[in-house]
Image (cartoon, rainbow, N blue to C red; front, side, top):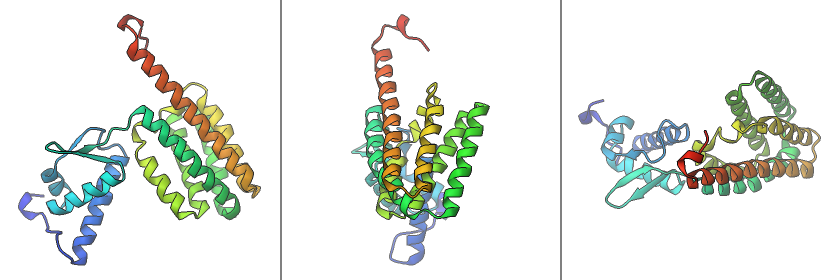
Length: 240
């Protein structure tokens, strides 16, 4: 779309607000899905053309994403996709542990038979992926499982907070499942969570989710420590 054809979205009309909301959703999706990389610059004039909105709307979109921790704005340098460090990723995982433990507890009390059946089917798919050695597909199943548990919780505040935390973890999405032996342990942990939800046992569901995500945090901590040691080692001691 040529620059002169970019529609104006400034003003109080409903169409302008809808266009700005759509631009926000599209740019957020590009960041969360990793189509825009950490530290990548976000140039207002380019975004206005790409998203089909005015530059004022682009600034509003960037401000919303900055509040979510997805974008960082530096004076005289503009906006860029925020880079989450390994230390921050660990903190985010710990915070998710508390929130998703609450979600699992609520799911044990509120999940429908259809939702439990979906969780069981997802477990079977994850097991098949593990046997086939397809760890990336396993990770996708893991994401579907957590999303269904959160959905079944009907806890809107926890859902919103978890979504904001997960959106910052794009760079680490597949990291832990690729650690040797981690995916097999993960499947056992997810099975315990689903067992507790199906049994309508909120205490067990909360404990199982907390246990699961504490192990994810432990894995991230070990990876962070290993990376730090590699960076500190002389070049001839680094192994890949």
